[in-house]
Amino acid sequence: MPELSDLRLRLRDIVADKGLTHFDEPVQLASGEWSQDFIDAKRALADGADLEVACRAMIAAADEAGATWDAVGGLTMGADHFAHGVALLAGRHWFVVRKQPKGRGTNKLVEGWPLGPGDSVFLVDDVVTTGGSIQKAYHQVVDTGATVTFAATIVDRGEVARRFFADVAVPYTPLLTYTDLGIPPIGGGTPT
Image 1 (spheres, rainbow, N blue to C red):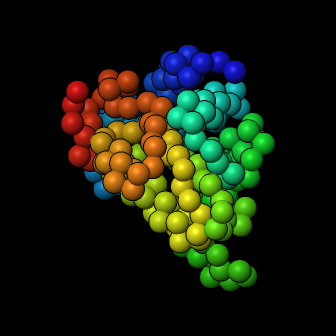
Image 2: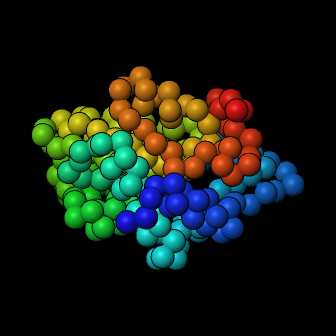
Image 3: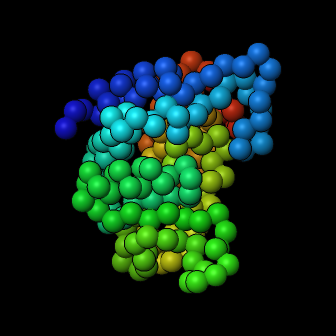
C-alpha cells in the first residue's frame, strides 16, 4: 500500500481538480457558513479509482495512528461511500447513521453492522466545516455502547472538529485541510 503522504498528495490533486469550485459570490454551506469556495467531495471522488485513493488514505491514517477498529461509518450521505469502500478494502464491517429514524420497520438510526458494546469504531466523513455532522454521528455511535477509536475526514475547512475530537479524546486526522487546498478557513478556523 502506498505511504500516507503519497496518498494525501494524490487526494489533494483529485479534490482540487475535480471537487473545488471558486464562486464570485459566497454560497451557503451545509453548516450554514458562507464561502466563495465550495468543495464537492462526492463529485471529486465519483470515479472508482479516485474513491479508492481516498479510502486507502483513510486506512493508512488509521494505521499510522495505531487505531484498532471493527466497523467504519458515519452520518449519511457524507460517510456512505467511505464506509463501504474502507470496509471492503480493510475486510471490516460498515454502518451508516441516519439523520433521523426512518419512521417504520426497525426505526433505527444506525444501519448496517449492529453496533453495540465491545465494538470499536472508525468514524468517517467527507468535508467538515463546523463538524456538526461528524459530531452527530459520534453521539449516535456512543449511544449504541460502541467506542469511537479514530476519526478521519477528507477535508477539514476549520478547526472545530479537531477541538471536538481532542475534547472527547479520540484521535482525529483530516486528510486535507483548508491550507492544503489554499482556501480560507471557515467555522472557527484559524489561518496558519
